[in-house]
Amino acid sequence: MDLKKLFGFEGKTVVITGAASGMSKSATELLLELGANVYAVDINPIDLPVKKVYQADLSKKEEIDQVLMDLPNQIDALFLCHGIAAFPGNELLVQKVNFYSQKYMTEQLLDRISDHGSVTFIASVGGFGWQQVYDKAVELINIPTWDEEMKWYDHHPDLIQSAYVFAKQCLLSYVTYKCMSEEFISRKIRINAINPGDTITGLTDDFNKSTSPSGDALEGAQMIENIFLKSWNGYAAEAKDMGYPMVVVGSDICSYMSGQLIYIDYGLTSSWTSNALLSAKEKTIEEISYDSNQ
Ligand SMILES: NC(=O)c1ccc[n+]([C@@H]2O[C@H](COP(=O)([O-])OP(=O)(O)OC[C@H]3O[C@@H](n4cnc5c(N)ncnc54)[C@H](O)[C@@H]3O)[C@@H](O)[C@H]2O)c1
Image (cartoon, rainbow, N blue to C red; front, side, top):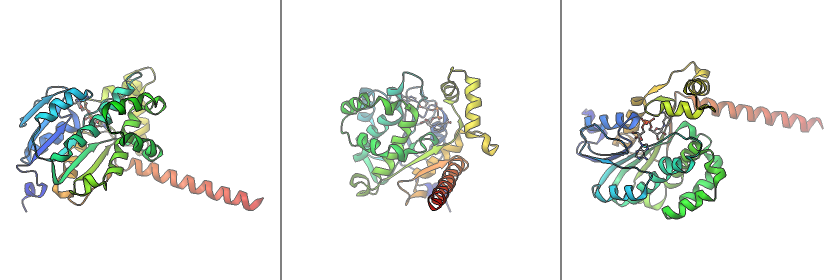
């Protein structure tokens, strides 16, 4: 069996964002190895031998539109991976970078995506619990234009307060809401997201600083370790632990997979789910025995 052919990327057109660093850079290296024609976008310079590099700030509609104008007319796979950490005061920027620009690019490029093509996002374990904001996320998803969307954000400071979390929850809601929508399913375009756990990348220092209330990177690193690693005596992932599986998700290997939110976290979020289900059950049993004692 020819493994390269199994992926189906040989000679195919792939667009990937965030490719200057981290998970997306790893994914791009693999895509090149698999023979894809890669068009890569980042705000920073990209030092990989791709077909074409676009240096653009994807928080800005005008810069996205410039890139969109130049991208090929047929795209087989789209990977949306750019992202930033949240700091006090950059809540709106986080929505634009981590969610809205990704929705906008997907919808602007949808006509160019091949039948049976794929769209794959990098969300996060940080979006865990996305179901709680699903109705609000869907309201946002259904707003048709960039400008109206920005107004919606202005009117919902409470939601964008949890900046990084809400943006990732919107991405996960988007995949869930759109996978069977006419525009995707009529041409069998697959749409999925991966949810990385703690991974050492270009964002690590910012995540450490943004997690600590005082902005102290060492304290933040300790807090992140306590939340994501301590319970399973775990270790942080490397960029390729996320980039490579993402390439698989967007490839022909996963040709029947759509609408999936794939947690790549060694099972951490499954254990959170298990604990929540068991404690809910215990609570119910307590309530029943309380009722029957009355
Ligand atoms: N590192 C982690 O622990 C972790 C965990 C869960 C999810 N994620 C997500 O993974 C994705 C990839 O991040 P990473 O961890 O590889 O970090 P990274 O910093 O190495 O890569 C992110 C890339 O996005 C680019 N980018 C940022 N803002 C941009 C903008 N406005 N326009 C264009 N490009 C922009 C950066 O230049 C960078 O190359 C992000 O969406 C991040 O939120 C990371």
